[in-house]
Structures are given as C-alpha cells and as structure tokens.
Length: 340
Image (cartoon, rainbow, N blue to C red; front, side, top):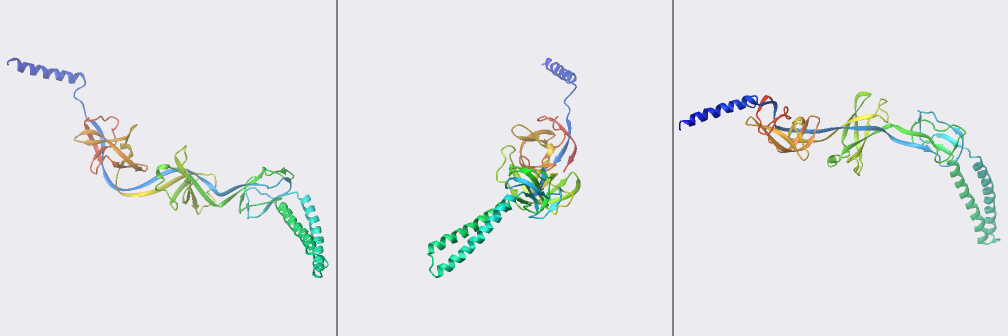
C-alpha cells in the first residue's frame, strides 16, 4: 500500500517525459469553417465553341471543260444565281443550232401530214411516226439545254465568295474546286456539352457567348441537338443561331459559351474547395465537437464556385473550407473564422 503513491508519481513523471520527447501534447489545427445552408442554385456552365457561317459550300462544276469566263471578286458579296464562271460550250451550241433546224423541218412535216390525215390521204400510223420524230427532237433540245446550263457556274445562294482556286483558261472537271461561298448575314454557334446534361438541354434555350476580340456579349438560340453522343468525348454537339450578329463576329472565331441550364430551389450547396475527391466517392470534413469528422457526400450540379450536395449534409452543419489537407479523422480543430 505504501508503494502505490510512489508508483503513481513515477508513471506521471514518465508521461511528462514522453510528451517532452515528442514536442509536448498534440496541438489543434486551425481552419476556416462554413455553415451549410440552402437556397436557389442556378446551374451555369462554360464551354468552348466555334462560330460558323450559316451555310458554307465548295463551288464545283457539274461538267468538264475549259474556263472561258471567270467573275470572282474574292471576299465580295454575290446575290443568289450570279454567274461566276463559264465553261466553253461551242460544241453544244452547234448541236443546239442543228437540232433547232431539224425541229423546224419536223414541225412542217407534222403540219403537212395533219392536213393529209384530215382528207384520209395517209393513215394514222404514218402521221404518228412523223409526230413522234417531232416530239423526240423537242426532248433532245431540252436535254442539250440542260447540258449547256451545266457549263454555267452560278452562286447557289446569296453569300460572300472566298479565294478563287482557278484562273481563266484552266481546264476543270467536277472534282475541281473553283471557290467557296459562305452565308455570313446569318451565323451559327457550335459547342459540346457533357452527356449528363442531355435531360435538361433543349431547343429554344438562350446562351451567351464572348469573343477574345470583343468585350460584347452576344446571344444565341439553340435550334439543333445532335441525337448521337460522341463515343470519344461522351458529349453531345449543340448548334445555336446567333441573334443579331455584327461585323465584329466572323466565321471561324473561338467563343466562350455560357449555358444556363436550370434553377433549383431549397438546394444545399457548399464551396467547391470543401470537396475531397477520392477514387470511389467524395468527402467533406465536418466540424463537430471541436474535432474533424469525415463524411461521404453525393454531389449534383455545380457552377464556377459552388457544388450541390444531394446526400451527406444537413442545413446547419459546419464544414471546413481551409486546412482540409492537414485534418485527420478525430483530430482537434480550431476555427479561425466561420462563413455563412
């Protein structure tokens, strides 16, 4: 019994020696806290996009031949149907003249045979043969006129011509690219969204776009969503028509696209830096009783600074938004500030 007090004093002294050997008792970590609350969450994502001409076409010929006339002013606007190139059609024009003479002769024959048929001087079969020849010549002339029209290269719609790829006197074929035409009075925007947004993206949504060359914010209206998701990027391509484009926005420009997808009420959201991303799940550090408690959470939509919490937290919980990397389970935490 006399030895017990001495043993207690000895153990107490030994514990103090151990604390001194390891730098004293463990200290609490300092961190900033955030009180979880609910509110309205507007999902806004930013993706890259490209400005495109509403229509762009490579102009090529339907037939082969030598260019005898070229009317291309590069970078100029042309109305629909403007003749921009002509292929030599001398041989076709000669054939057309010959057929027209034959048609006149056949027409006269039909007229004479019709008079003879009225007086029964010839049979119906003889008249039909002459009439058939007349109609056949008419068809041949129409076919030849179609071939002549193919030697005339015209603009398919109103637009601006690009660089010319040929010169007068060149021999071209249907594979030869003459120039390009772009409809620039109307412009469209193309961008891609991750596949998880498929349920909420729809035609009619208005998006904002910004250009590197201008501070102006343009608007575009979604009119088409590609029905097939890309297997490489797991994203869906979207096209929108730019509303009221001006001279400062041109096809080929890079655009930063802001897409507002949905508004949610009574949503629990926390700062993005509070999330600890792991291989299988996501965690946050909850401040409880002066200690760190790690909780698994399920996240939803996010914006530039906040993320929605679907499961794992309740309104009023205090979480850490700094000092997360140094915090350990059940370690002591000293809050330097608490934000709402």
